Image (cartoon, rainbow, N blue to C red; front, side, top):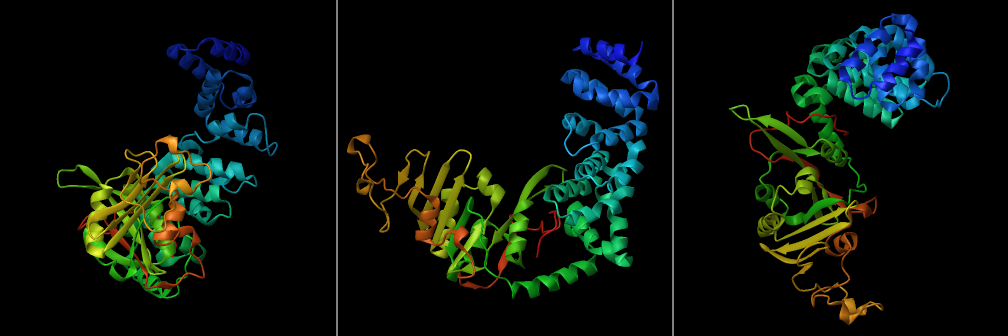
Length: 421
């Protein structure tokens, strides 16, 4: 049966896994000679048949990867680009040399697919790590993202070679090797000498830090003069100085899984406390605040008892949920939650405008007596403390930021990812 007949049989074999597997083996049997025809057919068959063609090409191996690269490279945008992507990134270890070679291809998407293919090989691609790490500093953000995923997938078995680069060079790869070590194992993979150098650099950079716009999705705020109390109130440990850039980078990888004495895993988190900004310290704990690992009322009560005042702000662009809350001396004084029941708690604050001031106010709407127009998280933050997005060169800043951990004795070693300084 020729290739065309087998492809026609593949179209009819939907749902029959045994028959499909037999046809796929038949399509791959001629080897390299079959690859061009299978690649050409990718965009002409049903989705189910396309998966079979992909599997046949993966069985063929190196010759099929060559054919797929040639097909993808024939134009910047080709009709079967989606199908070719699925083929390009799925080859096994036989194609490791070709994936490495494809990292030098002039077409960006082929370089990205090669990185993805190496990612799928995981630890089997450890010998390619030196070819991958320059892409950690690529000008294209998606390429950098894919390179990070690839380095993480290759994992810690690349550690000795990367540490060798840090020790012996070549110089052009030293910075990339340090970045890669941070990605695959954090401080546990970085040598003691490098850690001391980084600590000195952070100490220098914290004295030169400048205010910059901060995220506005979820955060806490406490008075700068009394902020020290928040560490005990939140159960934070092992704090260390950091720049604003470091703190924000830490929020991108703020969860680590650690095992107890019986091998059961649990999550621990990093928390970023900003320098003092116009008299306030903001606290970012992205994942635990998103997943509400704390009872927020209880947390605000503890922090405000220790610091005199604590504020919580949360907004979700997807659900349009908004929350802001103010606690003073251990008690929640005022809060708004767009989808809460009740929506408003506490008496209006001096700066809040009553709903009746709105020209469109309808007294028949049944609004609660304590409802006001202060439903915007940004404006509430600006009135209560400061709007993070408004932080800039005009903002008064003193002190430095802190990174802390939500569990005692864990330290910073379990957290991976390179932190911008």
